Image 1: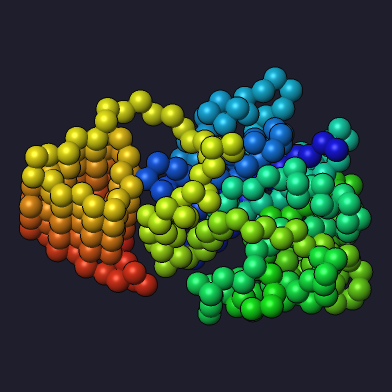
Image 2: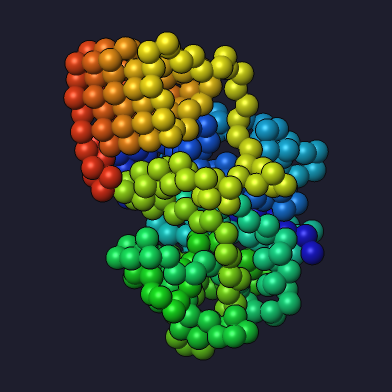
Length: 373
């Protein structure tokens, strides 16, 4: 039982466009010191999956810079490695892929390695701490064609579209399947994580591509399920799941990290979430600073008031500044007497003295990378 991994780095970029204009969704900063890909990459490393292909589309320079040799994830190994799989690399396509099936088809040469038995395919927008070894064991014992890793209905997802909704019987076999719809109370919600046998996946890719089918959930799973041509198992995951598919969910899920129960369910001692190591000085809190209920990374210099906020490395806030319910990314410079409420500042933003920016949790104000306001 030897698995390999595939990670999609650009899925849902359009839904997060204000934050992904110059980066992949996989390299989007999250939780004061991480990038979104850190979670799925750490899960694979902790589960003994060391041969991993990252399917890229565009804007992946920052992702490559973040991962480097992948030593921080214990993935710089002699015989297995993390490989970037950009479009056109095989010279057999004249356009950028449109869906997951088409993207996987471009990765056929990577997948065509007989030493691996199974493939774990994952989005990088779903953040959790999962042991893929248990999920793979479930898949093998089920004898199904594909296993979808899914979580139970969450009232917080009410009204939000999800790529895959599944209903399962007592044996965890799928008996109903829906795509591009809102979660239902008696259904599971797909987490964008699937397990295939490698041979089955390659056979599927050759057949679906020749028929012009592009999308994994809609064109493969839904179509074959409705025709009775595929056996799908559900692996129920009952841990913390944060799904960042749009700006609102990205903001709210960062704020959920301020809750101890969420943090304890996501950051486990036995299976750490790794990220790129940066040596920074400890954060300096000025004598008049007022900090309450925040996640704050190293290297910050804070003289103002910060409440219920997420601050990344090297943020500097002058005296008289007030930051509430905001996400402040690396390198921000916040002047005196500034008010930021429900704001997302991308990297290296400068906020001039006396500026007031105020949004709502549903519609936070976003200032893009490097801008001055």
